[in-house]
Image 1: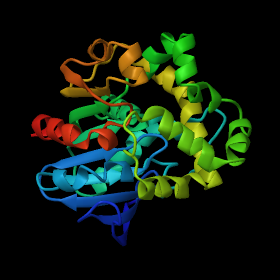
Image 2: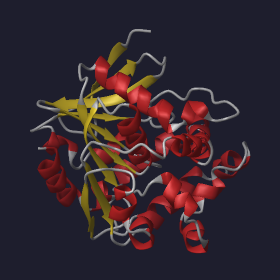
Image 3: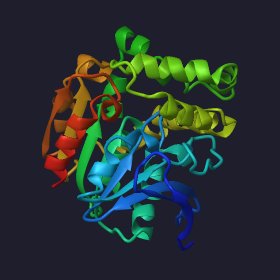
Image 4: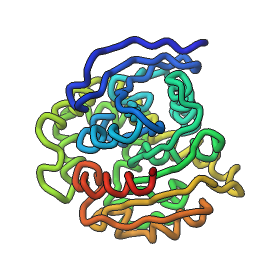
Length: 302
């Protein structure tokens, strides 16, 4: 299938960006905000956000780069394809392929990528499966998925309970969250952010708009189910492979990842060229410390 692009007008959250729905070769339609001029840079959000999470830094990045901020499949205004018994449609391999095809459709065969949270896990898989496409890789507040599962203890399971709640067989988590999506979303964001007000009311309302969709909630659960099953199988099969692109790791000093793991050490087990540091915040660096993330990105991606 050839890619098709449908313009959706200016972005209400990313100043100077335009929205588009791009149907890529996998048959999945992805929502993307595109802006700027220069070397291409792909930005990938995490859970429970959408591409809107980059609103504080994308306009400044667009002065130096052609920035593409996309909603992962299943999230935001991207398509929510049907899943299957092994959750493969929501594997990070499937998500990564979507995004490589998206960038090709926009004219970018090689590009840099930054991913936060789930987007970081997609970016990690992309750098393995599509090493010829990824020039540089920035990962925000993640350690490798397989490492985090392998080192699970009571403290991690308590702090990141949704890793174990959302993977329960359908429709258990979907129906429980449906009872009060706003409460679940607010609790999740407030638990992870350590700087009050970092997710302002308009951004929260946008995340909630998407979270109220039952198809989104099911897709999110499938994303996590894939992470605990088929993604681990892919990681095990590729345990001998390493990321060759330069890798920047940033994490929140007051978040779970930063407090429970030696983040640089975990990525040096997976990649050849790793650098990075902690920021004085919680999980959502690009919303809590946008100026510091922007400065790190400008230095690393330049």
